[in-house]
Image: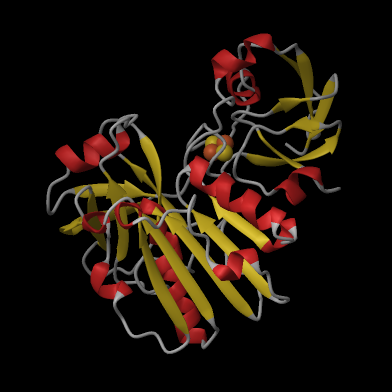
Length: 323
Ligand code: FES
């Protein structure tokens, strides 16, 4: 997979628990342009690969900006970035990928929980540039957790930012935006934040009459049940490759990707948790048992199915995949 070399150009504290990391290219080079909603993979020196949404003004090619929360239950990525990362450090990243793009709409409702603000702030700034009406609702536990305070304080001509603080009695449980409970034709909803936050907002939207296709969300946390231990209750199935016609047995304790790699088949992998989309592969026959959080429900149930080889399984005895 293509990698880019970047340098840590600036580190700044954002709120009580986050740092913003500005990455610049090698001398004389530029970075690929990006769109709001895009993310990059960071290849960390400790061997981990982690995904982070880009924020800042979309399109820029002279630097990328990400924001990382110091997670108490870090799986190693945020701990490394908060404790080990140094100014000037060289890093490898992937080019930006956008699995959470802005779709055409008349207006936009953006709802962020905590660190989920990062892609949505980029969207707000892009919508302002496009002169599209939007509302950004940002929920935090307390105001000292607010990130990118200055940018949120911009006077947007086409949108409004609202910050809800749980300490002040405004949380998604107590106070939902009017725009959520009263859906309007031509409006899209974008949600980003912790899993429980997103499912709460999503359910409230569906209960209020939103169409599932108008609700977009992105998560960089795996589903609780998409790792190997969970597959111990699964049964075997086979995977057949279209290119060679070869079939492989996938036992309960192994992923499709692992079996294919053991047999010399190259599989593009990154997160290995169903959250980045690197390993998405078209399914030609059979029915996938989706365990990823990359695809929307519509994509998962549509006619042209794709499967994440790193974590998904099969509902049928055999799957023919386009590999
Ligand atoms: S490697 Fe990231 S979704 Fe499979």
